[in-house]
Length: 508
Image 1 (cartoon, helix red, strand yellow):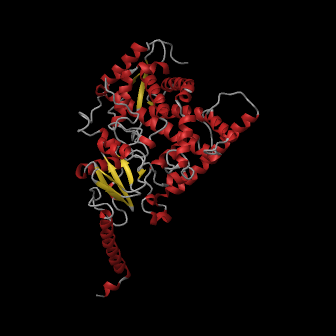
Image 2: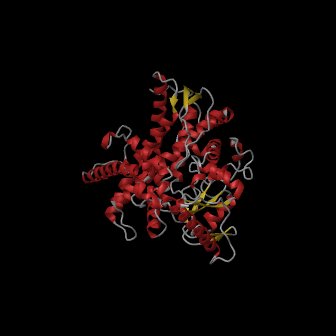
Image 3: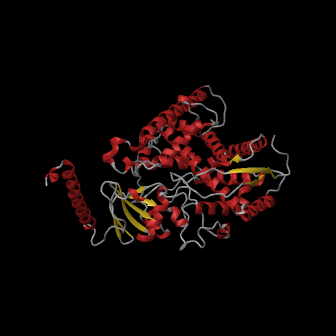
């Protein structure tokens, strides 16, 4: 029996004993101070990792499968983090509208710490006075309808450049065009010109890294599951090396942002007359000052980071999925092209002023967002205090995920949910602005995305131009394989062959 005294065996018994105590205490705690209510149902967690092992490489799908067993409100422990996942419009409404204030917080994450300047941005800032003021800055000063409209010429100019680039690429020996590359490039240029007054397509940063490479790395790291965020006791290991990579890319971004701000300050001192951009607006606020929030260089850098991620990544994903579904469904493509031909004609390209009359195009985008939610689990919320929801007790500091991807494919909500049917939105009042919980692509309530108008303007215009200027042909099947992250991009980009469609001269 000497093996019983082995250090390894004793450690094992100790862990089992501690686990039994832990389960007893948490069960007792879940019933105390809240009457007879219990936690929502969910799978039994493992020691240390909790239910993390159940997520797999596509957490939105794994959680949707679990919801079929445990219901539309489900409780998990991701590492040591209590987590609730909701998968129905009714439950989403309970959490994000009825109890919006309680779930208005954001949990601390490595991405918030290393990529968002200690959570000084809008998206990841903890709920409180600072967040209220920084969001007010964005909604009242930076992302108003008037401000978005003032950059219309930038969007139209850059989309025209994209059309020319697509044609030149197809004409110069590249038979099939990489649509993802073209879409990413045009959106990156639009966003950069909005906040910086110029594009950075070929800009080289420190270490020889290109601007596009830096942005792509930031976007990727914002969407990864970082083990230390769920198992703090393993933080010293930095499993996967994600935190090291975040710090490295943030250093590159910070140098770029500092240079950008200095360029603007020098330009203002020289009183060179140029169209004001969003950095100019924020520098005006630095000079004027405010009793509510003193805007600093850190605030400017954090907001630029938000605009890059939200303005480029989500829109690129949505447009690529829209083109994928239109190419998979020739009848929908033909109807969308016919609408544009009827409303715009074939003798000119689409202008942004035309978009309001393109009802079917809007249905295409809505159906794309239903099937391919730009943020499949939204950004996580966190409860400020304990509360009762749906007949269950939700403890304080519980992380909340809303499985928008599962809601968009729920057969109890949508007829033929796996089919791309744009007709379902014809004459429908359902929109994507957070008013309807069947379609929550941009969130809702206090933590809803403040840049909806800016993002959709680019999405509508790019899709309209791509299908109006060109006919597209593809070889083989267009897959629907996904890669999980902050957004849900296609696993493989679209390669398609364009042919000029307009009666106007081809771009030179």
